[in-house]
Length: 211
Image (cartoon, rainbow, N blue to C red; front, side, top):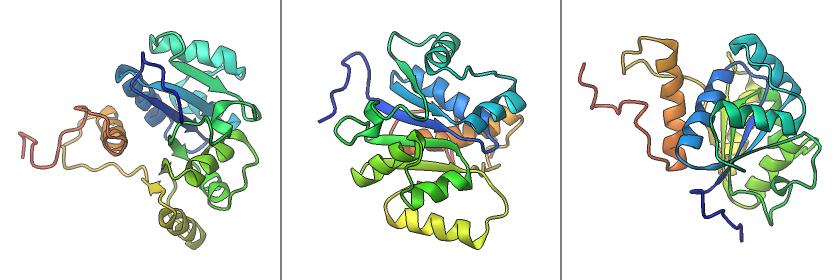
């Protein structure tokens, strides 16, 4: 049984890969910290490049330095954010006896999705996702690609049949978005909904005063 620090509401693993949409991950981190969740964070080398390219954030390659950087940026509590490297096989997220039962890959490349689908486990992101699937936990993949090939769609179907939530980064427009931030919040709000975390960053359908 996973032990949850009494100072936090739960533990969530968040993986950031090299798909476009790094701003989604940063907003999700912000919201999860505000909701008092403890985060285990993984970021691929391509993910760090995209963070720099898209939002100008140079996330340190060292897990310890990256953890301090994110903790300072989001004013996290002690031990609220832990960053792991891609080959830290002795980290808790590598084992079903210790890993959180909840994981989000945001954004998720189709390559990462394929590796998860076929149980490759060649790095810690893939292994952590494999653990969540085998332990019958909750895994959300925020895929970002267009168009989807037949192979992409087949992998999505296979993962969905295994209980994985496939959530493409496809924001809606019914809330009359006025900024990129509004579009980011739409998707992050949907992720929070699926995690069962109360959120008010995205207006509900039918509750928009401007309708």
